[in-house]
Amino acid sequence: MSDELRALSDDELLRRLSALLGQSRRIEWELVAHIGEVEQRRLFAREACDSMFVYCTDILHLSEHEAYLRIAAARAARDVRLRFSDADVDARIQEEDR
Image (cartoon, rainbow, N blue to C red; front, side):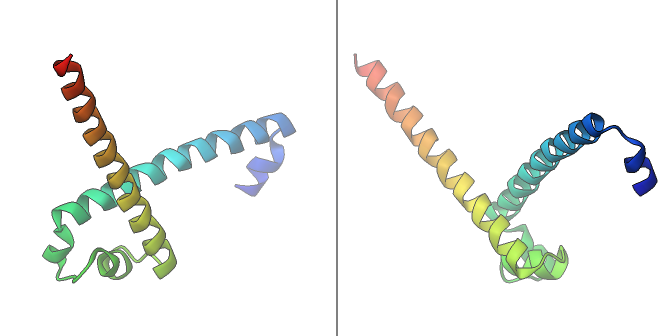
């Protein structure tokens, strides 16, 4: 791989790095979304885990730090979705009242 990278022009190397970072962000978001859904459904219990944190560290082999950050991000995303969903409902109700 390093020989292949060395053969790239500077511009191509920078373009590929940027594209890889974009892919990484999309994958990371999907991973966080899946963690959130598994936690919400409590599927970690099927694997005899007491919590999503234990599932992430023992079954998925994430470090404690990685598990904590991803679970926190999943919970924050769920909270934001719930708030926006509630706000949408409130806005619709207000519209109907007019």
